[in-house]
Image (cartoon, rainbow, N blue to C red; front, side):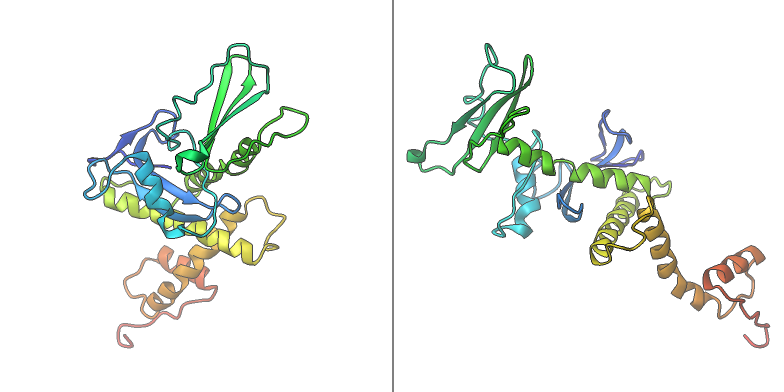
Length: 262
């Protein structure tokens, strides 16, 4: 996830394929079914005590979920096994939609690893790696392996979160990178809050296509209302348009106190 920021920062990055182009690169571990963010890692190349190596990033993200029996789906940037290059298949003479599998030798005593080479299009080779030793292939159609189907079912969760965070944002223009990161944390917290609420009340505004927007408006008003009620105790010196806005939020007329009463 790339959150927009154009000010000065030692670990600001440029990614031309992202809509924001410039900003902070945040690695996310998210639930594939409901887009709930479990853990985050802000990319900082010179961050003390950590390493930007892709394998180490994944290990940090999944540490809170270790030994819980969950599957982890990553893209090719994080998929790294030193023997993968030796297991790469060539595509010469391969049949369209054909798969070839390579497995770790059980006698080696190493963890089980499976590499599959799949031909989705002519002259294109898709290589996938998994810790599941499975060579099942679907019947008919494009004859995709179970590894391929499983990856397709969970590959888009972080992209969905990135899109939601860009669609409804709390961020304001700032040249201070800590404040920009803080805005991003608020956006992700709002997405998690929306996910939990919809899982608890699945029929809430079910027919509306803009449920996230309606939810965030309701959430903002509920967070704002206690502060407005506190501020309504004294409105001396406030402009009329501010008072009108406060009355709209509280849905009642504010009693105008005099200086003597205050």
